[in-house]
Image (tube, rainbow, N blue to C red; front, side):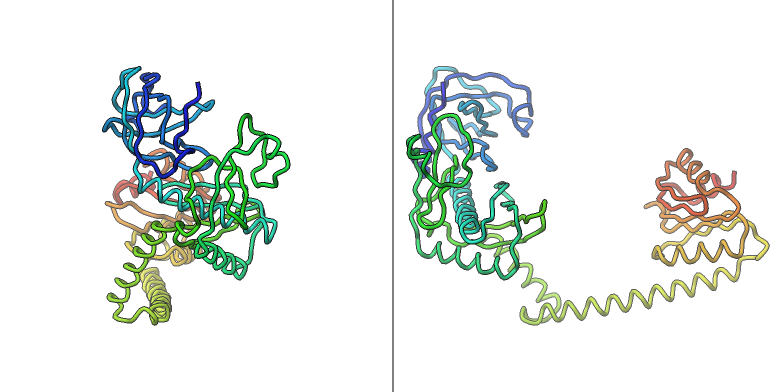
Length: 392
């Protein structure tokens, strides 16, 4: 039998009573990610929205026992708990209202954006993911930055207009003549969510009653995705939480850099330029110091293996190339220490360096590779052991 979906009847209700149809022990982690979920409980009716349509499930408890996951298959909803329940017993379920309402804000905001994007630009929503941390929607085409800003503004105008959001199950005849998004073949009744003047879409999830409850719609980031674009966004209280977090970061940075928020970007830009200049200067100093060290190596010395604590990769490569010009054997430079390990570049004009790489890998577990004249990689071994292996 199908589970009666109470969230379809009233998405704002938080408590319900139900009869336990069955309770079966399942393998931990088999039906959900939480390893504590050991029992699959099926009720005759539920307020718990399952993982469906790109949205994570509701949170809450049944008779005080935490619901760890909620899944749906063949219209039967299973609740996963760490403790068993007696089949045939009556139980009381309570959903986490804040989690439910926050999800409703995000999902209704997504419908507003997707509906308007379809009407204005013909964009098709090809993906949606709503978790506790991130909300993304994927589209088959991309919009410009100016278009996205305009869309964001219009969405918030629609929120301020407090437009009604209707949900229901039209008859088969009415559905056939209806123009709606996500029009795919579905067995049984199709639930339609309509935001008057903005969107009509098939959807199984709970939604707010009016757009004003969405609070605010704010795009977080946009990236190219499979020839279209992926938009990350937040609505309502989750947008407020994110704004608070970013505001705290900005305030903290302003305090650290002793500048006001308006000048923060200019201040950080100048600091970045100064850091880059100092890095170039330091790199040049290191290069000169290493070149001086090279002059102290006897020209008749065949193999040269050096160890340093801090050098940038370009400097290391330049030094190894210089060593190869002046010495016939194996020339290598290892940067790091015995505790954290070393990054290395080894070169030679007379020895196949790939054989050296094999020796280091087999004896000391080194990683990396390269060509016959030069190799590079990393190794977690002491200087003494490295020298011993290379001397064989």
